[in-house]
Length: 84
Image (tube, rainbow, N blue to C red; front, side, top):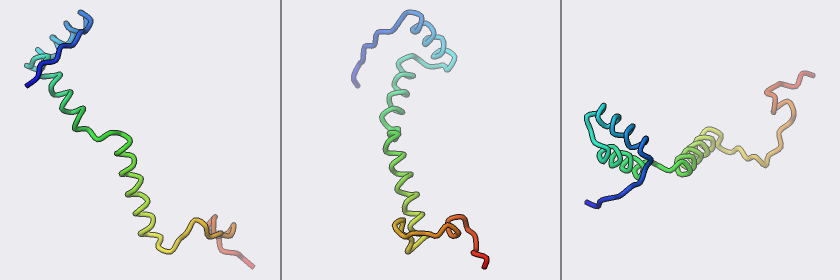
């Protein structure tokens, strides 16, 4: 296991000690858990890309044959039937 030295303001250090004591833990254990969560967390960009790809796949599945290049009439866009 590697040691890490971090410099923090004295006020922050004291508040962190109090928080660690409230959780029956140590500052080192809290920092260790934070770092574990940080590296295991899916980056925001990757999460958004995954959600976008799932949405696109869902749209393609439910609207097979639809192409954005096809022109729709005004009535089709607004879901109306032409009354004549």
